[in-house]
Image 1 (spheres, rainbow, N blue to C red):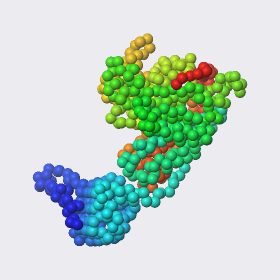
Image 2 (tube, helix red, strand yellow):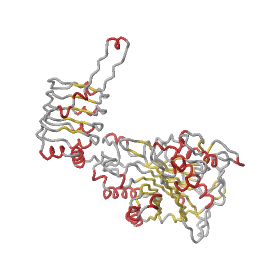
Image 3 (cartoon, rainbow, N blue to C red):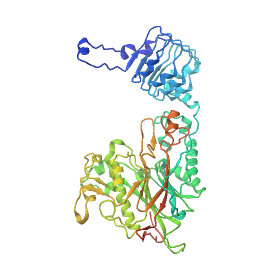
Image 4 (cartoon, rainbow, N blue to C red):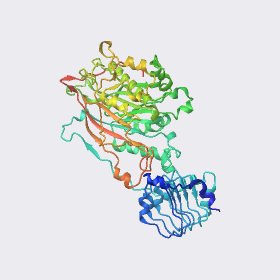
Length: 554
């Protein structure tokens, strides 16, 4: 087959030489493509230092091998090795995951390394003129044949060794513990099945994306760490009722769940695949007192007066949060073990904030509404709770401890995390994007005695359970790496005793893992796990509790 069908030289290779005037004026040369075409047999090692190259043309030479060091050219998008004398390819060629075009035509290749399957962004693979098996050549010539061939190789690629165990980081090694008031919390976005596709995660073998494989690995991880409370996001409705709930009930858990708001408008069949949030709790440790559902689109409609973008931008997103008021079965409030005395209660919130980076305003509005709803809930369940207390300048009120878990889809420097961490955010914060929320913001920013201030506040003394040193990323994909999952807690009422450390970065780097999911990582998120101890007294005053009536509608 003619080489020009693959090379398209007249389109891709245009050269511009600097004029003597440009050189005299000190103009800098900037080039990202290199062509070496002669009868060369060997390549200089200095070539692999040109890591800025995006295109390398080594066609029409006498090369018999390509060294593994080619993987150092990590920005390559086009690589032409056609018309050489290559009999084999280095497996390291599969590390060039930015490649869009790889031309290998007219060589002596009889076998392709399965590592080429890692080239998930490759669009053109030239193989003609090689003594490869006919079925390989036939598949590659089919419609979407390159993707099929690469998928086959990726599915048959050997898997790297399992990662080492994540290390437990003790935060209070010398602190005496009260086991009755100690509990652990896991926060984990499990990646629901409908989002887990080769189109999104092309670097993962198809068998490792399959729900039957992933659900086993997810459950194994949950049970391995054995947290007392599980806050899970992206649980599909059918997965909750047919898998997670029955499986976890067999291991001593019970749970609550709600799908995203769109489920209420769907048929029963379609509703099965809507994802949402779940909270599970160990029944030997906790009893459920009451549960709450927070629907952000409903709250947006209720708060749309003089804030038209509440309807245009916030109401159209169907994210939710759920909250469970739990009671420790053996956590008596320093009254001994008299069964008639009040027990320690904990309010646990689980939320999944909108994902799109272009909607920072929606993320921040949803977070403000979340904290406002949690303050309302706390007022209901705790008669002594005062919403003016906390970090906005007044003395903190006594309250039931609060643990806020969630995939906030927000980085540590975002307005969302600033608001949760500091208890306040300016109403002119840049993350509001100058959208029309004036009425909503002015109503919530009313200070004491009706005076308006420039801040939105919440009254919980929240702290993040993980420092950035302990967790440098919670989400790892090819296109994004960062912390977007969090566990916050009321620092005046809970003490973190320890956290589960991050997956080893040395392992990730050493095994060239470019993203999750992965055969050893069933979600694109890693789980967070914290052990807390509740402080049942604050300044000598017992924490307030909530005594339920006989029936509490959701």
